[in-house]
Image (cartoon, rainbow, N blue to C red; front, side):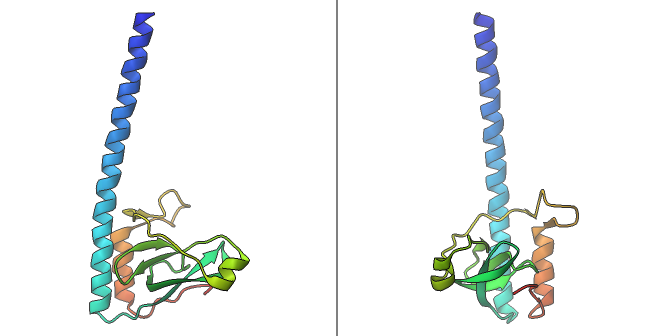
Length: 146
């Protein structure tokens, strides 16, 4: 019985250590991605890329909701944005009449180094590549469906 309890204790400790390592790695990646986002916002402003109001969507199509945020869309479908102060947002909201009338409040999220990880093939892109493409496009970045 003592062997089983010892084995259980060691497995639990190993699992906790692995979870801690994963959390530290994710935090480091998010910090690195956050720096990239901050650099993007500064560079976009320096290049004179026009910032505009960022709208949130409910699902794949209309309606769109005001967010009170100003910045640049990162994705062509309008689902990701960066504000002029360098915060990263998922521009999604629940469908509601209140949201339609009064807009929505969104909180910034920690950016990933790989945007769309776990999505269908071809829908994942490294954050640095996406940011470079967005900067290169300048003001010519059409958003589909908005």
